[in-house]
Image (cartoon, rainbow over all chains, first blue to last red; front, side, top):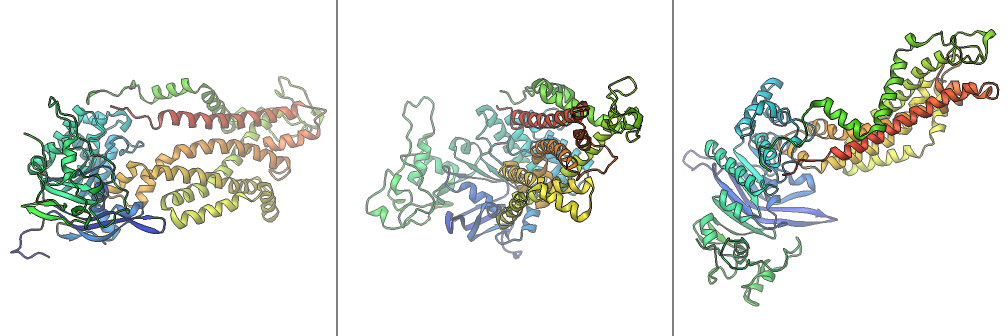
Length: 337
Length: 294
């Protein structure tokens, strides 16, 4: 319990999170020593390639890793100062949808085809707000209206397959926000959408954030999208955070070669420069030795310096951390303004 | 596509959707209509029957088709049409008993196994595998020997034999649905396991079960015929399609139409259930997962 003189703890505090999955008889580390914090009204983006552990880190917050044969091997997740790791399932259930909600990559598949739009949203109201059928329905129609679905009265009676992708994601957002959570985990929420639709969904999320001080943990592999929404970015590689910082700093002056590589692969219209891609692929989980995990793909790796040991996450500025042996002597290229 | 686009399908309500399905699946639709007719006949038997189905008129045995006896009379002078109409009640009820028993056993077990996985899944699967290895007829004979004769008892045994199919279908479908994002989403909004299974998994498993129900009803109708033919079904005067076939077989050379009338009914009803099941399966595959993509 916090003392009155102490500052209030951040909304979400993840520290040293390590997640393992069962592979046969052994446990494989998928996420290792991941730490981040998130305050109300703030957006933190977890960025990385597929398999970098960003989704696993985020679902750990909801206590969902156990469902697919995973476990939290170490670390702590505190929400409003309350420890979530080791919390009984019953307590976690009370949290899900009410305090922490989640939306998924493919809105079409995250909606139950057997229920109408109104029923999907009303369910949250019934589970968490203890509302009766009629009140929950009214609340659902209100929510559809709030996320900008036109003609909510009529649309609430439609089934998910009758919605376009963008409208379906709005519907999923309506369901997620129905319990008025203070944290939304958005797992690649716009990846499956058209670019124009993407922009409007991002705009909706921003509007909601301004109105309600909602904190968003935004998972994406697309730095272009991240630039639109995030306040801070944590770049993940092979299960670790390799760089963390405020969005402008990180984009303008990346300190980790992997971040530089990611930024280099954003197409810039009219620049005439070829895209820089990162050679190679992410190493499979569990195959890491005691050296820098990015070294084999790194353009700046030095045979001796980078093979000596696993680099720790070091502070290189206010709210700025980098996991690189050469963090101090490298000058990397960011995005030119 | 723009965000505000209307759904691509014409929105003419349930009736419109039904007629679209009917056009795509004419055979299954025809089978469904035929089955509805048969069920209506069974329900309205007292109104439809022209005679008491069990009343014997020994002076009028083996009458040909006539205005008085539409399908003639049998070896005891009973009206065949009325017996077929009343017999449909017994036969359909028997089929419902068998399928009901197997649904009640197989579906909850399949849901549980598909949802919980792990040890429980393995244990239940072995139990139902074991059940599958019991020869159905022998089990039916044993149950009748122990509990005494009666169609309901025999059909309960048949239901027990069908149960593994329902277990397997339900388990596989549950397993598949559990991998869907909307199930993860339902857990992420804080649904308790029971709610996840009953409200989110079950409605999406029902279509697969429905296909199986339709096929099993057909098999159960022919199972009733076999059991009654062997004398394990209804007792003497009561008519069922199977028992009519059985008695008619003894006088086949004298009155062949007594054999082929119930035989034709059994054949067409079984075929209709199968066609219907197949039609349901196909139209679910066609529309079930179809999403309006951007």
